[in-house]
Length: 98
Image (cartoon, rainbow, N blue to C red; front, side):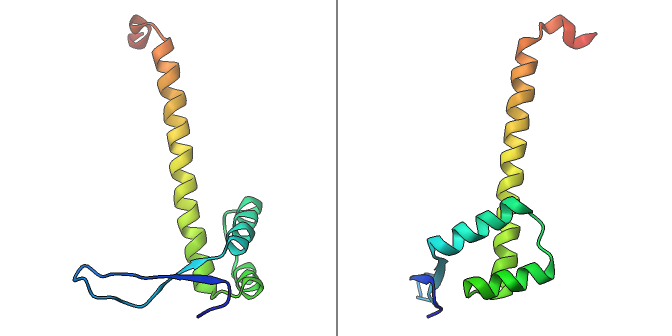
């Protein structure tokens, strides 16, 4: 088992057990979140350094950042949509066609 990772059983569609799914520790997640707040793009040198500091593979760090950017983008789009919808509901219908 890799240091700092928790294991969880993983099941394939056929019902056969596969290799264990590894989850990041709270310490690793907090460190990754802190780095994401600094910048959501990951330069190769930063990826390698972060992976070494956290005991992860550089590929794991890259995938975590990719997934986190996707979640961030979804939240931004939801926020923008809610704002547009609220502004649209404030307008009288006849102003929409001018």
